[in-house]
Amino acid sequence: MKEATNAVERAAMQQVLPPDLYSSFLAISADAVIAVDDEQRIIFFNEGAEKIFGWSAAEVGGKYLAMLLPERFRPSHRGHVQGFGAAHGRARLMGERQEISGLRKSGEEFPAEASIQRMVIEGKDIYAAVLRDVSARYRAEEALHQAIRARDDMMGIVSHDLRNPASAVKMLARSILAESRERDDIPPDVAERVEVMQQAAVQIDALIQDLLDVTRLEAGRLTVLPRDVDPVPLVEDALYAMRTLAESSGVALDAAFERELPMVHADPERVTQLLSNLVGNALKFTPAGGRVEVRVQPYDDGAMVSVIDTGEGIPADQLPHVFDRFFQVSNSRAGARHGAGLGLPIARGIVEAHGGTIWIESAAGRGTTVRFTLPAARGERVGVASAR
Image 1 (cartoon, rainbow, N blue to C red):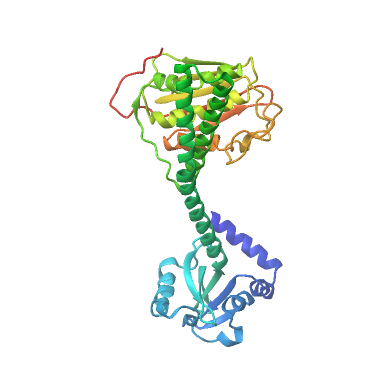
Image 2 (image 1 turned 30 degrees about the vertical axis):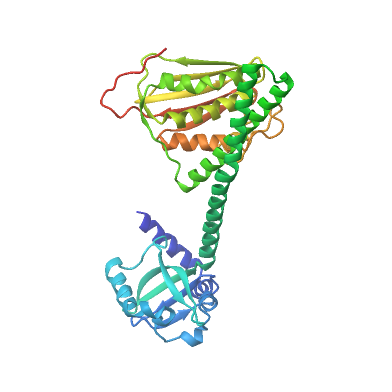
């Protein structure tokens, strides 16, 4: 049906546009348009072909098409074209492109994409090829690969050369605070400053981890080590570390679990990281006196976790971008930048690595809900989790 429609459209166009105008369109195409006869001698060579190959139409007219190919491909080329005619009939769809190599007059080889069509004119086979030089694209891709390799090298330096001193600061600050509590001989203002140093080192370490994780995500190397776990202690343990932050922010942090939750197949450390990102965001955008609730309920064969806050919400025009790297929602409460804008992209990567989905429901002034799913346990009927 579609082919018949296309044929009708072509016939209608030909009634409007004379054949010589079709030839004019082909002549000025930026792509190389080349036609050969049944002996594969060049009978049409447009301006695009002249620019790409460096030969003029007069120079190649009547010569074999193989002259435009690297020598190593010439012996098999004739058979390939003839085989196409036998196997594919009149035409191959333009989208069915194959990468080939071309040869310029200068002797330079270049990568190309080509499409081919067979026509029968006066009982003879005519083959028309449309060829596109993709050298620029290949160079851009190689430059991108080099940039990615350079970035990965930089991330390795970040991991080693910055993480070690940050860990040292955390360890020393923790040691000083522990000694001050035991001996009670460090002035309170000094202890307070040491505690601030420790918190700053923790933030630096978290930022380094986020940068490493987003790099792994882009490279497809973010790993999860899931096992069958009870979602109730999994979520409760993740929230335990967040309660101090919630109290200092004046925000209530609660958890709610439906009964008879299924066991899930999840990586506890990654889910803890995931919830820390989501709950941390919720606390950041919820004013004092507000509330953040983490709700867990059955979903399909697994479980759905919802992080619900009573904060300012996300404006509609910003909502489509919240999972973009380095994007940060701007509102009256957040004001200046907080973090690097990597929490939600990493959260999505962790969820998808588990085979789940994540989405956000929000509106300005009406709070935000982030939901994600975790798959069911892999074991044979390992039972249901204990709702507490």
